[in-house]
Image 1 (cartoon, rainbow, N blue to C red):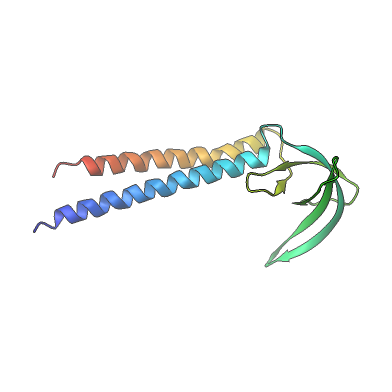
Image 2 (cartoon, rainbow, N blue to C red; image 1 turned 120 degrees about the vertical axis):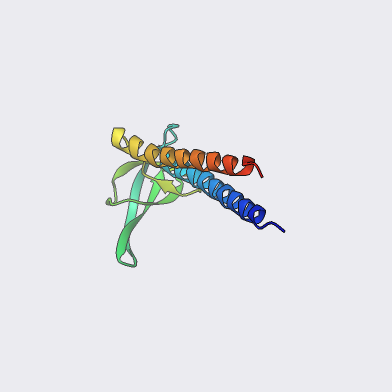
Amino acid sequence: MRRGGNRRRSTTLMWGLLTLLCAGATAVALLLGLARVAPLGGAQSVVVTACETRAAGKNGYVQCEARTDAGARISLRHDGHPGERVDAARAPWGSYVIPEHGLGAWSAALVLPVGLALTTTVCAAVTRRAARRPR
């Protein structure tokens, strides 16, 4: 029994799994980045009604309650104060975020997914090469 075939299959499988993991990470990073910049104009104006500082290990954050113009109550993270009017966009996972504007926000939202997409492409090429290697 030849042992080289088993090693080749395990190498191909490893690169294939790495390709799938990178593709999933690319999709998640793209979703998170696009939620941060709200490109589809889904942001709505809300009025902050109450804010509370919460502890989370070493880092704390401010959780605010707000009301939309239609009267719906939403919860979002924002370093603001009651009475302030801000824009809030609904993220794909259901919570609300404050969209960032400007070139810096767009570049930060797209650099990670593009880098992960390139990594996915390289892993896919290595997987293909390992699978097609002559036996």
